[in-house]
Length: 362
Image 1 (cartoon, rainbow, N blue to C red):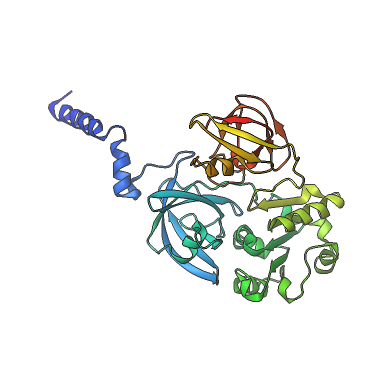
Image 2: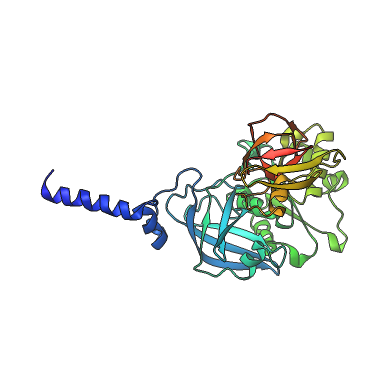
């Protein structure tokens, strides 16, 4: 080793020693996020807010420029967005509403919920130039290969339009598409002008706005027969409130066509009938805390009510950020009703409820 190389070697060793337990690249990324190394699976990616657009009184589109490591997305997928509020990174899942062909920017269209919540901050306060973090895109609510040959039917309500808009802007608007889009009033139609413009440009895309406050009925077979007589022959994508999704699942199941139905949920589907014997005492082994869980309440919510702050992301059983070990007891999956009683297996507390006494490694 020559003298110059030797000096460089010891300089790097000394820098790493002062950086411990982090790395020098980690501190460089904190000072300048663009210097961050390419993201690996599960890592967060730095992103900057480059523009925003008001869509409705309570809805805003935020355009992000992801940093190094972003692998792009397929139309219909979502990301977990991490926003720093008062020094705490808070995660929320949002569908990407922009075209998959733009790999340098993504658009998230967010509707404000409670005044104190993260969504309200994103819609009314997050500034252009702000830095956030995102996960890689995930989710399988995407356009099935070959489905354009059969024709497509999109059914959306409220902010359920967001993943479907990504599909339309990725080329679906130029194909044979019938689209039922629900909102209370015309002013509540997210992307209303853009959707109408798509319909004016393409004779193959047909938009059917359904304004419930103006007398439009909720989804049923009669509405399907009227607006899209060949609905049984089409591949179908549905996104919106739980009631809409449940109705669609029932209609397509009754028609024997469940395999053609694609559903995207924005919340955790809960069991319709909760066994009165469900629920019980929950012991959080790592923290030494105990709490009472009501039947049908997610263990993540029970942990937070007990003063814990477990890791979490989507809160709907998709991202697995909150996974923990079931040390003892039994839990029920709130989506399927499946009972898990095997000690030592990993469960998803955001979509699991206690059935009797339970011990978790939280």
